[in-house]
Length: 185
Image (cartoon, rainbow, N blue to C red; front, side, top):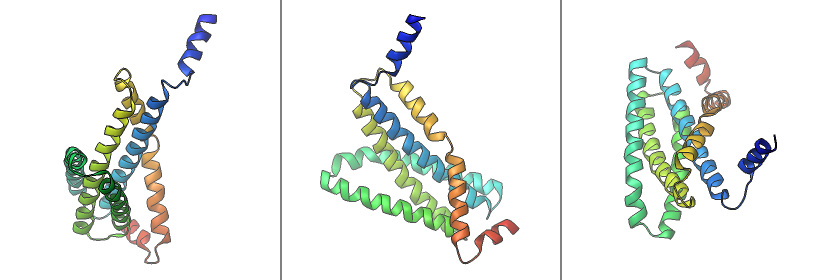
């Protein structure tokens, strides 16, 4: 019994060696949560406007463009100076929020689709930066697979429910009554 208790306490020991891993997992988990929530929100809004086939196709394009954004981060990191990176990060965050608001309030497929592509290009860029920073926080790659797996599991938890609740709040707060229109489709 003592050996089991010792192993449990060693596993929970939050010493300075494990703190970067905890921060890295939290950072990757938060990004994964936001990315999956935005993806579900995008697909949910489109599914009220067009058929399932076009919705799935739009989702595939969005995920593909996010991979392009992921691949662009090394160029961004190499050629931008620190001050420019900070300014660009604020602009990317602001544009991402604007894209989300437009996706939630839009009614035309083409406009929502184009905005979603911009959003997922930006999120791919941010995601690459998040994973780069997270990997730099870790001293070694000893717990790399475990850390990424845990962060993904944390990010998946309730991302669909939260984005559905956000969409519901945005729809109820609109004076145009968009909720009634989408419910009738």
